Image (cartoon, rainbow, N blue to C red; front, side, top):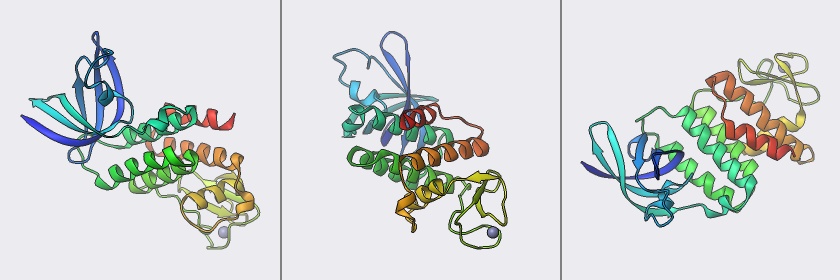
Amino acid sequence: MECKADALVLRTADYGESDRMLTLFTLQQGKLSAAAKGVRKAAAKLRFAAQPFCFAEYVLAKRGERCTVIGATLTDGFYPLREDISKFYAAAALVGVLDAVLPEGVVNEELFLRAVNALGQMCEGSEEETLISFLLKVLELSGYMLTFERCADCGGELSGRIWFDMQSGCFYCGECARGAGASPSTLNVLRKCAGLAFDASLVGKDGYVRALKLLSAYFFEKTETRVKALQEYIVLAAS
Ligand SMILES: [Zn+2]
């Protein structure tokens, strides 16, 4: 049986002499694995379709449980992401996080469209801001929404000494102090990336790195999954 699916490549694994197994996030069927035969040969017609974060319309042949890529039409290769090491790792972190949260075969149109938009935004603008916004959305859609508008306990303003609790995913004021101390720069970067009001004087490179570290630790706390590319991107962003 043949079918078409709009899909984003989340992961690739080489096998055989020139083949590659793809983990695809499809709009129509959710996450699935598909074999791409001969795509590592220099002249292979479908070489482009077996690259990380390629977005294309795939033609898939299904036989029983097995799925093979037999054709593809490129929608967007997000080429600028391949020419900048920071952007490349940020994009790899994004698809790595998606791969970690998506169960096989479950359709999630919202996440698919957000992922494709985020990769496009990373090509044009700030990859760290886009990645943080995307992580916040993924956490929210997975039921692990962070709360950082006001103190989760007393409802007071979050200023001065603030705290973040990994268990609840909430920030607390100095009076209610729960979890571990957090920096105002982390909080303001998260607010900025979530589209909330923020203090621009507290948003800098250091804040982005801190916010990413907090989100990575929180993601691990909730999913017990470490996304290697996310950790690599944090190291890169901090240097
Ligand atoms: Zn409080």
